[in-house]
Image (cartoon, rainbow, N blue to C red; front, side, top):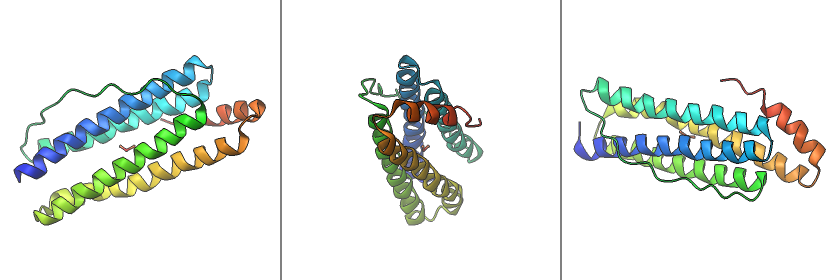
Length: 162
Ligand code: FEO
């Protein structure tokens, strides 16, 4: 495999693991303010991010490459409100989409068709990731200041499946 593409795929694994770490930090914030449904949603999200990292891990492994892990950055832990958390989530997912798109461009440049196909799954997944974060953010903005609606939303998010 092309060395630049290999290096960037390794970096993407790190970014996915950072995403898991970030969402766990957000889960911990929600647990601390007793919004356990929101915390549950973030824990499920963190598991999904771990799954994303593993997809690339297995892909590199199947291609006969060895994954090299780097340290994972410390995620933020100061959040001012649920709206703040979901603004950050949405912004983060937009950055991930950009990163996946750049990887896809590089795979195309390097004529690595297998990597292109593998990344197509991520491109579709990112549509969902951004949509989910944006929808929750918009709902939160609408109900701001009305705690009973926030509690109802917390119940709704507690139903997110694994
Ligand atoms: Fe792995 Fe939320 O993107």
